[in-house]
Length: 224
Image 1 (cartoon, one colour):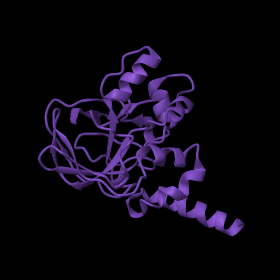
Image 2: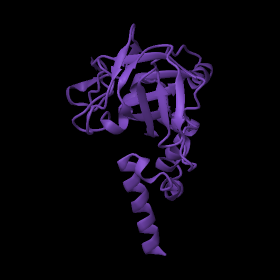
Image 3: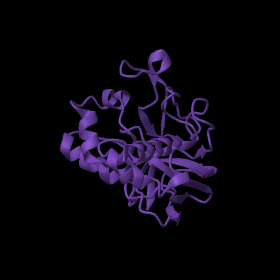
Image 4: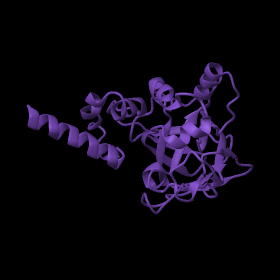
């Protein structure tokens, strides 16, 4: 299991973003050398966990619980075949393009050591947005991406460090529950009835997801 590339984005003007100033950093390209990764701080103030990577819409992206975004090369290859176009590493705005990693089957709270020092923790799935749809410029993209239910994973920084292309990814902790990135995504999008199942991951969930799951349970208890 390896990192094929570490991808960084620069702030660029775009019509398909709601970010202040109309800029987005979703257009990411592989870095030439090592990249420092640290906890960027709380959402709304902290951006990307990767040095030199732009996050322009701090209301919806970045921060400690979305410090790093990983997407599997195998899934990019699948989309290449479906869309009939090349999708280079970084095409989905991912920071880490991986090989041999079951990103969507990873469990919330699962920890990866990447390279000699960096430790990341899986926090949530990626929910497609208007910026992503505009960046891909594919008809009905949000619906198509949602139906595929292979969203890639956001990760927190547990131990900072430098990473580079070719670094090995090692799973150093795998929780006992069965709350995967894919389940998190389904419960957050098309299968809200699955939200109670997410509570098995409890404190490892993204705070917004945890609030949504608790609210769902409370509403249904009141209606019973």
